[in-house]
Length: 158
Length: 158
Length: 158
Image 1 (cartoon, chains in turn purple, brown, cyan):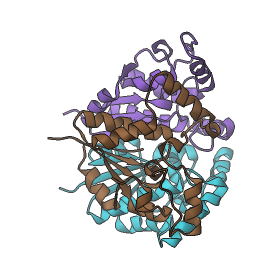
Image 2: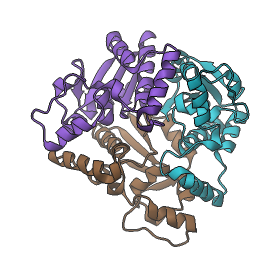
Image 3: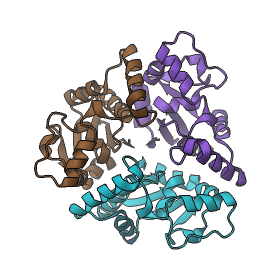
């Protein structure tokens, strides 16, 4: 029987998103079914940097959209970010080891068929429009997330 | 057979507490048994704001009790809190979408019968008295948490 | 059948490391098999403070090694660290309750036979050498972590 892994991507941190996507891609290579449910700050990871819009948004939603990271490479570190200096240092260290960047892991996950879901309540509160997010992202409610998670072999809150 | 979800609420963040309680309430509506184990900073969520006391506390415990959030609506955001401005903005955005506040989700969970446990070691270290916490909160040891978690269909550390 | 718990220790925070190790030690006492997979900032917890070296490291790796916590007692709190003042206060409060320190929980886990693994990619990027880490730490790939986690009764991302 196929094994299943379910990740709830809550944080919008570069390093935690790396961890989630490395696990997702590795699991997929092991023929494990993988679901990622993006909620709250995790939505910043699946914004399409070229499709930001202000249309039909409240003033707060516009401000929020502009103040927050616009896609994967724009995310800060969860620690030692130091206004971006720590992140630059980590990126250099990754390059020295020929490790791919977050955007590569994200595109890998998309190609491998990792299932991407977004939390409806988070999308509504933050005022994101479907067209500002990656096209394969399906917007679902907490109930659908729970049905998937409860029937998975492992679940992580990241 | 009844499915079970076990959440370990470690962080004392408004946004993460929202996530935990939305999952808890939704799971309960799906007839899933739900346990939340409050530990460390997570205890701030189950303090009764009207029952803070200094009695029988060491100097550090008194200081700690005063410096820390006094119940759900007092919790900061895990990100972009900006001394409370970011949180106010998020609350406005929630109101625009008619989303309930954290306190409503907490009271919902209490009414629906989500099981609330507190970590004994955390309570002891932080010096909280039973009467400062929500009355239905049962104080248990790590062993009891683990017995419940190991026999649940999903567990999250939030 | 033996039950299994798998922890992914991602954060390098004193308080979260305490939580992980208390769960690990308690589970071991309950005859549960326990694995901890240290990744990213979690590696700071398993550095041997006396064995830091600069040999064979790039400039960034040297800087990184010096700027980051050098073992368990050097880790900051995830919240209210206040440049170390908050942590000192918590340590005093722990002492008042005769609670052991993080280093004691770590040594307890080592003695009890909790399995310690380190994430190969994290070790490579951060430039840590095997001899700078606790000797029983085995360096493994994400695939081996997933095999263990998928076949465990519970998994937490801490």
